[in-house]
Length: 422
Image (cartoon, rainbow, N blue to C red; front, side):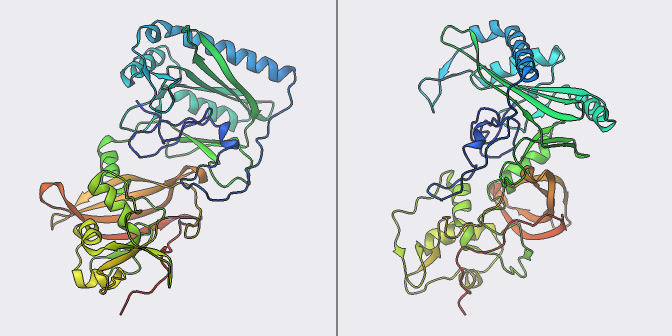
């Protein structure tokens, strides 16, 4: 059971699961922080969250939700008290409980009929007892008053509570965060009452809702999965696609094959395959920096080739021609992602939806590119042919876009704006 994405905010809460990323709900601190991986990039301040002025209705709704949360958390107070606590590696003042204990708490609440986010250390979160969401959506589709709650247990044993209402034609949300104090007593640390801008139940089994102003580009929609993902398909996602992704490289956003690599930029793949091979980030400070005729870092040919070549069926001669090989320095140019070469785009994640084995032993994998910020689990679809080799190695043989939605795709622009050497 798992909450995902490696950032932790108060209402839009994420727990890192090994670097794949699925979003959940909650998000008041996102009004202050834009989810971008870069440091030092100048960004405009995000718009303020639209919160209703406090009135009797708001007070009553918050009091009701607060009482509800304290009742829920009291159900697993004994489990929490007996659980072993460990110090958070991110904050010495915060203690965490194990995933096994979180599972135990979730099971208890699920068995009592609550709509609880089922989290896991490996696989994506989804909502247990999710039939109520379909009932909720049917009611509001008929313009009938309805309500739906979502409950999530945090890493420190606290509770995140989100309560949606359709009342008198208004879309409303009440949020509450509960944590444990040093005496192991539950305390309310945050409440929120606001209008919902938009919500929708998708045929894919995803429920989306939006609580930020519509002119916000990033983290517009919160996605709650209503059913578990196929574990075999997810394993394929994690192995072949999540390490590469769709941003800051164009491997899966353009058509190419081992017979014609088209516009595929090998230079932009270096740091991604470096992490696949070494299970670590690439640190460039030990390599030569070149500023003219364009800024780049020289990566020694042996390192660059050993990192990428084995994943593609391509000759060394063609690889060097396509990757701007500098024969004099025996090196390849590479640019780190920065504000100067980054095209901003919401987070996109791969989701394998099918695969088949081919006569030559390769496999064709069908992948949907999911973009929750744009309220879609199918921004576009691509097919990737992969050949598995001995000792767990593999090669990518081709990528083909087979479907595009009306939404603009992620950028397909190499960081180094140079033509391959003749």
